[in-house]
Image (cartoon, rainbow, N blue to C red; front, side):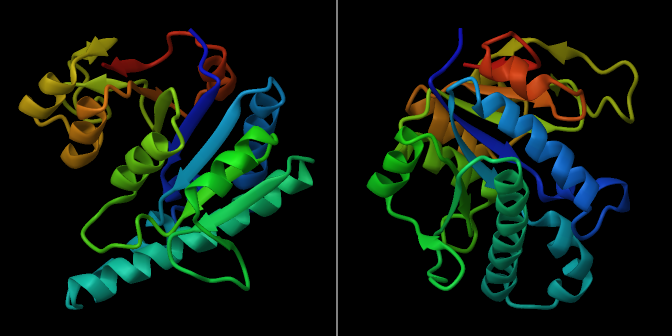
Length: 234
């Protein structure tokens, strides 16, 4: 069943393409085209993008840093990715707003929940940047929080594999695939598809999570149409 409003969580690495670091313009353009095509169906889309494509590159240096300082660097990396994705989406003709949990008024709007909802109602894509603004919270948790705040009907987590497995299918060919699974089982089995705090937050508020393969072209459109792709946590 299709949802009117979806929060899509992307890793920063998807913007890096095969390079694994930084922003690959061709990959960002292709991703923006898929998102734009999906938004044209009338679904309201919010996006949360990670910062791993920048932050992983300085992870060795960050290992000796204070955790709070390192997390702030990660938040700023998500702002860079969000602006890159906004630029690509607007070149596709889709009005897009970046809203940040950290105030950077010269480059993006501060996050205000009611304003974000109004943007979505007007047909704009909203990209939520800088996590929750708090250290020790991942972008998975930020995605769950923003999805609940904007009353999304679904949290969609894009990955490199087809959904949820009991172990990494890229390393274990015998990995078991779950088309549906409960929040409790994800947590009890310690399936690291998302942070435990984000899964628990969705469980406590009955927000379904769909995990799907972003590398399969057309999957974002299938997602917004309500097709049963990937794995459903409910």
